[in-house]
Length: 263
Length: 328
Image (cartoon, rainbow over all chains, first blue to last red):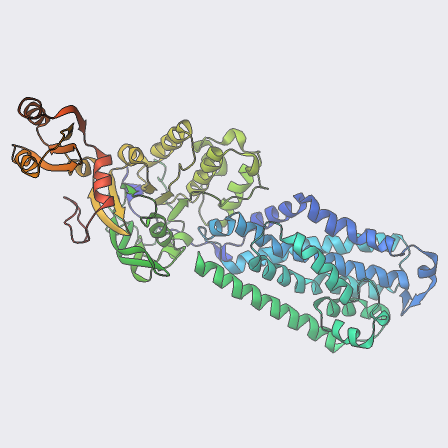
């Protein structure tokens, strides 16, 4: 009767390092359940668009590149929303470490790569929702630009924000806190300001402008507006996104290794 | 039979033949944290189907050893194998699962979602509703984990450990912080499960848990195995009774005379109190009351607790240890 149990069953290791759509679905549901995160990612960016004057007559009639200033604002706040969504999803590892969940996951076949991929996809899904809401509010409320600028702007704001998924993961492993987003919220606001998402960088002195162009939100903001402004592709902005993403990802891997070695 | 149809064995073991591979094999395992030696050359082999209590005081190295069995940390010296493979491989194949002391749960998921998520990560899993039922938490499946009591959370950890249908279940002080009723319910669930033939290794510092639920007790102290056997065997190492009495001004010569009485194993003086360990307490009591000025007699039976204390508090490293299953 017990013989079958006393022999060791031959078991398979799950494919894709344990990546599963159930895990992904529950991760997204958890993020959607977090009211604070939802307010910051889905309500604040479109609210900022309206507060900063997206609906105002002057912005609607003032041209910016191939469209109007309202479109410029809309693209900036779409990037800002995607930025917060990605950081929140990445930084959730801090909460999971604080609650011992990371350790629990190490008692499953889940591979760290599959775990990270799930976090990044979750970030992308919520980031897409944030960009979409800003675009809907902008589209209904004053923003005008060519269709190609809508498409490239939306895609860049969405995909370029992966730099902040990496940033969130790095901070999540660096800061052992359940309230990591309370620390990162002000940091993100500062980065958005320096990245030219709240006010055009033309308003800054040339020294500050140069400095700002090296901050992590600058590249994705520039690239998202490239279609509207018709500037062409700015290689410096691409380098900004690539270098910062690589830097934050390397930081996350470094902290992750320390974390698993210590436990 | 629960495992009537195991998933396609690659090397099918002959039915009814006991696996030659031990469930757990620790050989000369050491682990240091800075200057502290948590585990010090520990050897332990657990055969499939055994229910083993890993008993020892806090700081004996139980959790450190369990972490190495689960692949959560690596030994500084020695080898750890689970079913003949590296612990991490055994975990990835769902052969070993664990119920940890605390943590390891997300407060913002429900009980069922937590089990669903865990199930989704393994290649092979029991149905979620079945394990919730077996762990006795089916009726709170839709409750948020953060709103569950400590005992309910512990049963959820147990349910999660059952999902991959592991051959080895490891429990690290699973009833810490539970009330008496919670502990009883938890252990009855574990016991019902162990009757299916699963190998169970549990760490505890509750003697009664080791006594009641384990086939075999491995006593650890300062990172080493100091005794290994059934709880009866370990208890037998400290048989007899202890007779204590007050005897003002007892001299060394008088104590030596007591030691010479038949069946007396040990005599200890603590001020005016004399403690006699003996196989014949009646003879010692009769002698003390009739032939000496001793008074205020007390006779106590020695049990697992005495063995536990004797073996874990002042064991010289070279002292010969257990009567059976000696590992050093």
